[in-house]
Picture (cartoon, one colour):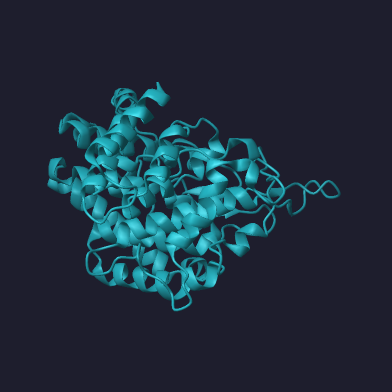
Length: 393
């Protein structure tokens, strides 16, 4: 079936007489149509599931190790473990090795929330049926408005480490899951009740204020690896929902002057990610985040997809550097990642966003062939975009 789909996809271009890279809109339109063709069955199946789900927020479960209250999001640092020499003492680090005993209930609840809103918004975009927006409002009210179940708009207790920290700035990366919630709300905004839309925007405005003023947010903003990228990506996403033009300009400026020149090497690689114990996975993750940032922020007046630094670094260079390792993973020059090596790549958002931005048929073909419904929790958690239909213009 996939082979037949690809043959049809290729035939469209051949019959239309279009090259692999053109300067108009026809190829972009065809890429969007192919994305809908590829995802429609999955979206409608998942939307049927989402229509039957009841809200589950941070108030559903708690941990005795949390320093916060019932409305506070709590998670623990992934790579921190009990010390064999002092089992009751502070945890010790094992970089790249996830501790399966850590508290993840809030993280999983937020991922579920993201999946529900993302797929409902995708189904709404495909069908225009308001029942999907109506169902989404149940979950939006539970997380952001209803006093008994809402999540407080901060992340003071995320990625805590037993015996060391009650929370850390790097925990802010956990709310990348709220990006598809924010984008889904934008897509369904004309079908949402005015009071619900206002309540959601007010929550995100408060969270943005916390991100930009709290020491944790300031620390995360300055991170020189994927954490810094993801901080800016989140701020951009939430600022777009709330209409905060000042923060949108801030994010675009930070991408041009800080993220791209400081993280990308001359060849398009991310040196800090390559130095980790999971260089492949972290490189994919950071490229997804930077590409999503470009997708959120690019306008006709300020197109980050075509932006280049004075010495030639650009998102396109990053895509062109890494694409061969997506198409043929055996070409990867470094050691395999210490965990989840066999689970990457999947249908990475940088492929479809890049194909749409640069009209690259090869990238789109590869995206079509990859897994669009990963089951491994670590992979799902590290996909900032799982519903690309709601992100394509």
